[in-house]
Length: 96
Image (cartoon, rainbow, N blue to C red):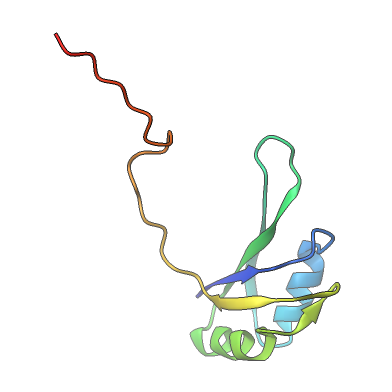
């Protein structure tokens, strides 16, 4: 199960997240999202856990808990939807 973690401190590391979630079960992956240009963290991450029951326990146990001075928002990650238009909707069609 994929879990979304929001409201993270920019100082939070993958190891710190892994340790927090491992208290609830096996962690498959930890991915802190960074800005593609600067490489700076964007304040959210995704953690994947192999067991749905362990993931649900982690969500209920860690949501609202403080890590590095910030209360985490932890919930099940929503599937990514394709919006199709990724350039801000600034289309210009030349009419002939």
